Image (cartoon, rainbow, N blue to C red; front, side, top):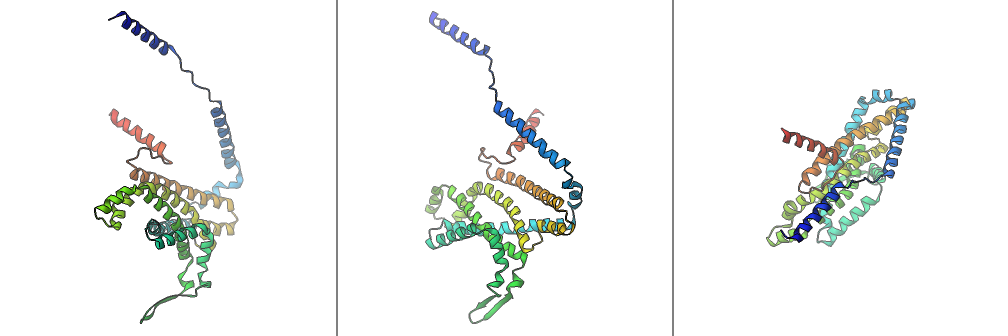
Length: 316
């Protein structure tokens, strides 16, 4: 070894020893400490206000938590949410396909649909469909050379429950159409062009190539829309549909126990939303399993639990 190489090695060793002797001093984060302290103080006052104030009447709220009327209202709310979401998803998919169609007529019709049903407030649409009999007294179907094959009074057909399904499904379909259209647009157009060159029809391209890949981008906002729809169903109270909120109103209108009943309603909504959020997480995890960057509401603690399980299995 030459004297030059020995000198270089000595310098490198000296530099390494100097770096090893340095102590890393963490930066003091005063802002983070102050913010954390303020949040803890705020949480204390909020919890204390809920726990100490007798006006909340927690014992009354507990007594109504599983009341038959509340359970019936909860069932109707869940039923409304499922039916409306299924109809809105199917209709929204059709509208989204029309939006990306080459036909100017189909594209224009779908654009006007989205513009109208997203622009008019859901409550106005709900009241309109409930009062459809003011415009049309009878709903009938007639065929040429056959005559009238179906006729029913509008008031008998447009019940409060059915009016709620029609109004909210049409409204929600406008939002779902834009979500699905964005998912379709997220798929590279080269794949559809290659499939077209191979002779695949457009229907098969959507079914086998475009829509399966679009699901990764469609599922997260669809889950959010389902949660939002669950809460939006409380609007059906205005047309006397026996949902969760209407059932609570019917009780506290007689007993004047308004706050406890509102606590019951809020608790059930929070419980259902929490369950739906967990389901949304696993759906996103399934459709986005090829993308490790996916982050959801429960991503942190679920990954932590799964990580601990994996480590414990590895230890065994």
